[in-house]
Length: 180
Ligand code: SF4
Image (cartoon, rainbow, N blue to C red; front, side, top):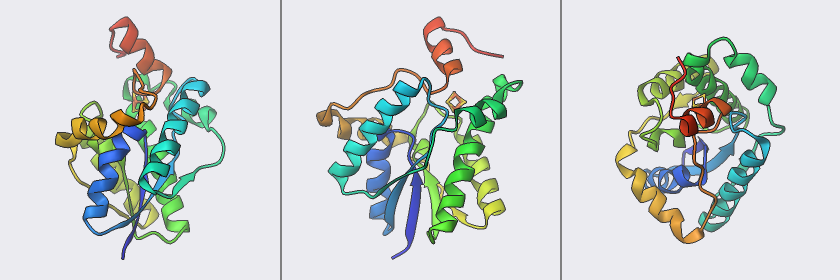
């Protein structure tokens, strides 16, 4: 059976995504690397939710060491309007490297289920990173199953985030603005 490492942005996007890739015949593991989630206490709450889901679903969960918030800001400062490109690249590069090192056949990300993410950009960066690191990026447009995924996690009463992750997205959410 082929082994797939799935970058996991949060439990709510992960629930259906893992069911999908298992149904496609992959042995799946989750990979947590999200230094874009601010502040640290919010990062820890989302990680805890992911750990609970992993236990529920019998998913191996690999957590990258550390919290690379400084690397995140070094990538995006000065490019705030384009920050998602740098954010995706940082997270997917780390996932691809880990997948390669640990002998997985391919990698993907739960971000592909979210209608709130820049879907085409994700696909572009996933393929680019896969080419650079020499490992296949698996793509599927799961956006129509986003609400199903959230229904799956509802009984678990997990922490639910109110913004994408970074401080910029928190500001946009609560001030109802767009950074340009
Ligand atoms: S809005 Fe979301 S995807 Fe974009 S940079 Fe912030 S955390 Fe990353």
